[in-house]
Image (cartoon, rainbow, N blue to C red):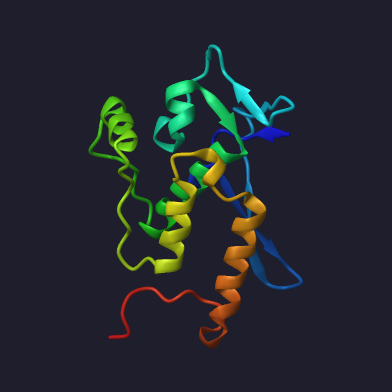
Length: 163
């Protein structure tokens, strides 16, 4: 199994599906990818590469442990980027302050106009214990269900109030 280690908006490509006339999102830039061992984790003893600290999970920041679950954490940050219209996560915090902030149980605030179900998904991605985070397959199923439940609005998620 591979771990991407750089799941972020800057690495998402949109392609148009000509048959269905829709956009598809695809993850790109595999420069930080690594292979996991048989426990599905990768322990970076040392790294000569700069890692995207604001997107890393607690265990990646403190123990240099990477897995599908650290990519799930980064997916939650990617969702924050999307629903905050491109805000940089933890902008006001230094890297050291960010680690303390996260270890104290704090998480990014809900961006305005973000549906509750999406923010709950983000919080699930940011659970401290990696074992408590969803798998990507489950996240995909949750997102599919959310979109199916929004068919009265033609598949669009409701943002903001009805005013």
